[in-house]
Length: 86
Image (cartoon, rainbow, N blue to C red; front, side, top):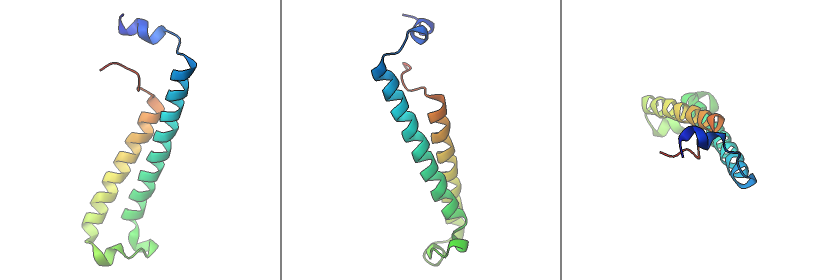
């Protein structure tokens, strides 16, 4: 079966539920990662105390990575490419 034929087949309710659950999970985890990235980037404004224990440059680098990964998770939840064969 070609990929085009696979995409045109109607999905069962089980597959639709699976896609919906994964998409919601990706949106939620993406928001959590973005929240953690914002917290790491602007930690000195939140009085979190991490600046005292860790170097500010590394906190900003890790915060930027968290923002990128959170954006990727939201994008993956939007695209819903979970059932494609690799």
